[in-house]
Length: 93
Image 1 (cartoon, rainbow, N blue to C red):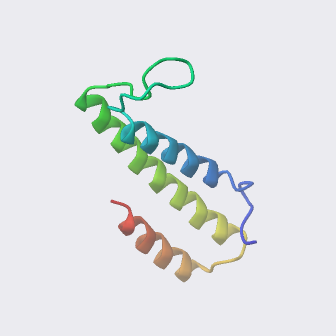
Image 2 (spheres, rainbow, N blue to C red):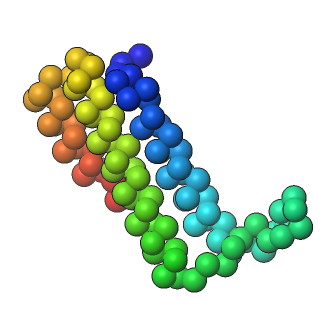
């Protein structure tokens, strides 16, 4: 496995982004959870916009950390680092 300079913590950041996406997806869910409350939290649109902004920021941060990780670990050279950085960040919507 490549990298490891940051103990692969970029994956934890990506996991947090996924968990926030679940909150967004389930925001208006009327089902009852295991504790008797609604699955959805019914946060208003301004909150959901900020959640979406957080997801994008976290995904970008995870990519940035991954690219730096591979550079400092010797898996990528400078040119590959710059190319992958630009390509991967462009893919995040």
